[in-house]
Length: 572
Image 1 (tube, one colour):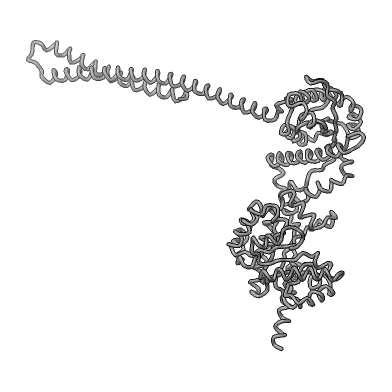
Image 2 (tube, helix red, strand yellow; image 1 turned 90 degrees about the vertical axis):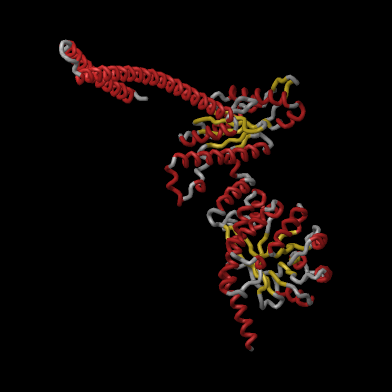
């Protein structure tokens, strides 16, 4: 209870007691007056009214005395309880304050512990990222260096954990002695250390580490004897990397004023520094002479292309840099479109001088194929629904290529179901293409996924049939809706009659298994088309001889034109 409230309660109690006291005093004087009158009238007959009034006054006097005593006791109880309550609250507040302080101290200690390497007691990667975020925020200039004990894994395998850990501790102390101006000395991973030197250029840092390379690689005395150290150093200056544009998009400039957003950008920028630093360190390890590399050496290295490619691909999906092309599949005379294959293209692939297959391989390797694959499925289904609304006879099926990651991880079923549900495309219009190489990776899970898609009503196509894996066995295990013969059979059909015989044998085999939907890929010349027609098999043709991959509007125009031609022929 606060002091004003306490004073108010005490004041009220005093007023009540004062009123009772005055009333009691009045009653006392009244009773005393009646007693005096009774004393004076002893010689006269008793006055009953006066006697009754006197008795009543005495009774009231006793009552008010009792009330006053009770009020006084009640006031004393209130004051005692208020004092005890105040003391209890004070003690509780002190206890809570102490508990909060202890928890805050424990959290700070835990956070600090989470940023400390348990072996060397240096910063770990998390601690270095926090330090770099502060340095970036303060716009501090300097060089970030990474030093790797190249033969650390060999030391660990030969001498065991105890000796290898002592090597790490000794090497950490060696870094601080050789470069006393370094801050944020960190053990990143295994035998990799990092440090930051303020106000030093890359050239100065290169000279510093070159001069001390002998000191870094000096023998370290251990319980197992002296051990020779081999080291490599990677260097990057804070000016080498500009602020990544994709961390804050132009349409989201308003978030840059948020402290939380600024911290997030700084943290991502520090991650970018470390990402490039590790690549520079790996480059240094490959050098035959002095194993020191900087950012300029990194720019001139071939594997920068891979790093740049991965960084660009992170942005690509969010910046709508991917697009879809549609390559029609025709009947033998080219008069009708019986299917479409969806092909992904990246707008920056020509700028980076990479092929579409390299883009797909890198998406697969980096794991970005999962979101990109989901996007392709959704876009293809949306486009198919648009065409079907315009003309239900415009397309028969639309094919989408599946990756090994989508197939083996089981995510493909969820992605297909989501695309069909969101777009409303009937399942039988969608065809999923998989290659033999996907099946051979994990045939059990792959066939399980394909069976689930089949149950949904989705068609399945086997792509690149006959490329040299286990095609025949999989044709026995699973009934595909479409088989696409690899273009290597088509490319050589005009060079040797034996190649034509091999293709005929493949087609006879497929027909014996009652496969009716067979697609010949890579038909790019009239001569090849003429040879294929002469074979007399009913197949679909996909290739530049009839059409290159088209954007959606171009495909729509071609399909409508062919349909009009068919209609005119029917009229004639």
